[in-house]
Image 1 (cartoon, helix red, strand yellow):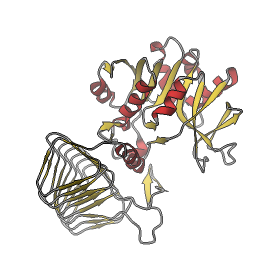
Image 2 (tube, one colour; image 1 turned 30 degrees about the horizontal axis):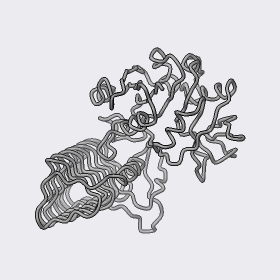
Image 3 (cartoon, helix red, strand yellow; image 1 turned 45 degrees about the vertical axis):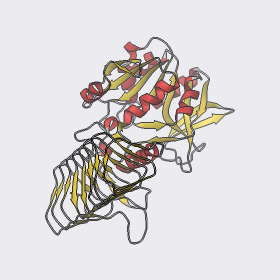
Image 4 (tube, one colour; image 1 turned 180 degrees about the vertical axis):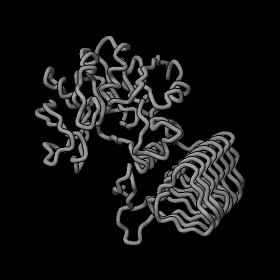
Length: 394
């Protein structure tokens, strides 16, 4: 089954993490986010993959090349991002029959994807408590009869997961989709037309996560790191303790007095310690250094980031080449224990998490003894003077 993977967007809601890296290429458990989508598609029965690329599309091309796990890959360029139906239209020349479309920035459980590949036409639906922020599916006897975007009075609790199996003609229809009120050609409008012309089945999705905002990148890593299996290939000091499901890649080092509580993935070139603590679902990317007396809890540290001395990093996402000065403390819990709020595209919203720390763009630097409040976002290259308390985005 031909499979289109939508991977062209920049991901403005994920800024500053996407200033230098397209959202589908952000790290999740040691792989780019979109690679988890590709793996699931191949396991479910994809015969070929068509990646629709745009913003920094060269990074996708360089990572995947001409094939993935034996499945051939072709690329379609979406020069200007005018919506998901426009992205599918860009891929239409690569399609010659029924096909599957998957969001390249979503995670799907493999079993549910296999069900999608076995149905035609169909859409994946996931049940949530509050569907008002999603596209909501109206379902009758296992058939999808309508889709409504962000309704105040939802017809069901089943939401669209961005996973579709379309009939061949949908590739032609994609180019004819009108612009929505927000100025985009939406694939949900294409789905609405398919629903009118065909019987469209509902494929229940047991587990799904749309990864659009920084705290969802944390959730994605929590999910995927939860399934890793212990493997120690790097160097470990005799008195260090690696507890549970820890992956230490070849070329990584763990120094004296360190405790690592899995699930954790420490990638090649990374170093930890001495006397550091790593716990929670934590990813240390290539060439990260976590030094003396540092505690890192449930965080993602991207390549080249450095926390060398006596600092705390909890529930945070640090972009590449960040450097935290000695004694930097990243707070992750409000005193009133309410959900941490964060500013996304100029609007302050709840993360839905009681614990959420810092989101730092590439090259952020802090001086010694800096304290940063929960939910703060620091833009690429931000510099924080020694002894500063940071309570607002910079």
